[in-house]
Image (cartoon, rainbow over all chains, first blue to last red; front, side, top):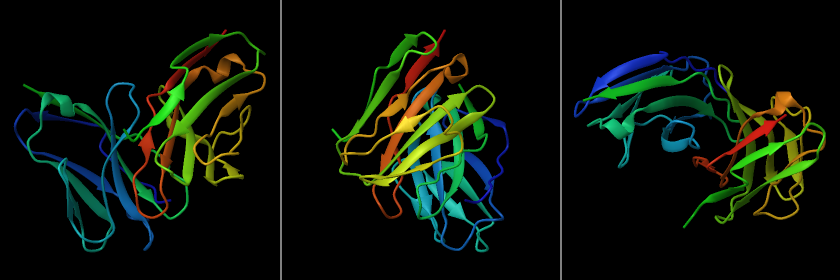
Amino acid sequence: DAKTTQPPSMDCAEGRAANLPCNHSTISGNEYVYWYRQIHSQGPQYIIHGLKNNETNEMASLIITEDRKSSTLILPHATLRDTAVYYCIGQGAGNKLTFGGGTRVLVKP
Amino acid sequence: EAQVTQNPRYLITVTGKKLTVTCSQNMNHEYMSWYRQDPGLGLRQIYYSMNVEVTDKGDVPEGYKVSRKEKRNFPLILESPSPNQTSLYFCASRSTGPYGYTFGSGTRLTVV
């Protein structure tokens, strides 16, 4: 699995877009980029994933650079309930899922 | 409702007393996995299973056992718990293919 690098923390204003960067320069061609978040000590929650193309769902958008070495998770209108630790993970076909330190996002009113 | 169910949610036990944390999923997922989460160390994979009777070690398997006799269940067994196994444990499952994991609500284990 690819090693990923994320900023340890960031603040975001409520109602504004939150852009969370992730570097995954060692990702291999068949590894997807996954994003999860964990609120307090709850179980991590799947957000979105992508391989090459940008993706959007009801929770977020994922922008992957053309060289696939980095990506950005976009929360379009952050709310206080989006305060969480966000994890970017490179995941292949197997069952291995390696969590890094993640980005602690604090949404402020 | 599609979910991963762990039991118990909280458990305090004594050193050396065998215990089992159960995990069950109702989504017919092939892949299941156990993680522990500790302050400063993040989430670390203990064991995983790719289908019935197929299990393998993750990053921190010492002191743990698992079994996968049925597709829906993946219990975590601590034969002789020690205080360094005090942690927050999560079970997760997913289907084959590029799908995200569904995590359980966690089991907070304290070994005294």
